[in-house]
Image (tube, rainbow, N blue to C red):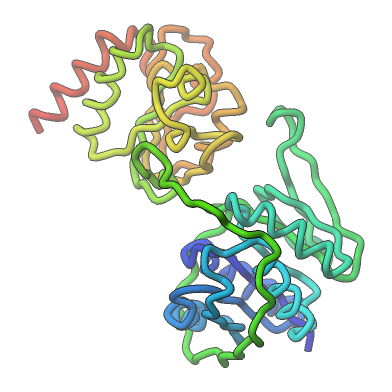
Length: 315
């Protein structure tokens, strides 16, 4: 039986892909496999088995330390061949974007990356991805026998665990990477995972000066939320790139997204449009963010934000 093969270096993203993959596998009469590579592969395999993988290809060989793209791609291609995979789903993380193309080349497959919606229509998988800077959506179908899709995290909901345990299939020892790492340096700045945040306060060009960002930080603290920003603020080096939401940053799906001084250009809103509730504060009543927001306040953030913080702190 042919399979759908799922992979991500992040277990949480792989579980999302498995949830939808299990649904499609049932409709297309396919099996469902997954791959776990590198340190902690055995523990990750247990989680993927609990979310419906029939087989999990596993290796914690030292060659996967640091997850070199060429070694991982070769292993995924081998797993796909072993599984007879006709569909390969890879989470479109920073690593996944590169891996998808490499795996597709090895399998002679067509590939679509940065997929933000993937649907089964008349037995064919149709991928949606933003085009022209997010101004429109391109719908694409892969016509090769084997199809590779790199799907943005948070595109699918996490499914419920299922009964039964998938079979663990050890992968043979991989060839060493052709790339030699001569040095590793920790990235400066704080680490933040906006994709996991249940509440986000986004700040934009409505803030007149970097020193004024304390208002957004105080609001985020009062809401127990993460602070995010538009790309322009990161370009100004007011906030680190890890806090960008949108085409150039994270795609999020929080319970609440509160946009403060954010105009709402499509390049930003594609990263927050899946939020359960969106609220906005902006002086311009015609700002595009209000077309997306469930609630909005037309007003000066320098007056509105302190009032919101005071009210939240009084609760």
